[in-house]
Image (cartoon, rainbow, N blue to C red):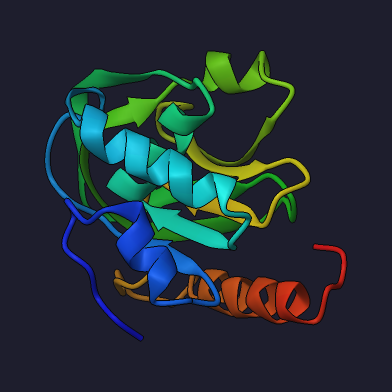
Length: 170
């Protein structure tokens, strides 16, 4: 494992020959980070598995022409209820963001599918890229607001890495 700064060139990451890329959280307006968006798009085009959280989620969304917008009231703190659309189960999450990706844009996309929704306000909380080993969530699965409801996402990423490494369908 190696940690790269936010402003790293995609080629520097690719030269390291990773099995996958984890795009972490961070502050700020994702639409103002044009250089980062370009590098994330290059990483996506490499075909590597990618898992993004929070700002990483928003960068992946931008790469697929999903807009983001500033929320009137951001999501801050613990005990935010999320619905996993694939399993139908609820998850209690930790969140800290003031921008969110557009659910309308995802619903109109042929490349991106919604995987999680915030139950308090119906905002988008997770996506996957159709036919690619890429998924992301708006919340913080590494944080523990009580139960570890979302820790499975890390296992899911490891499973995706293994399948890609063994040339299996994701």
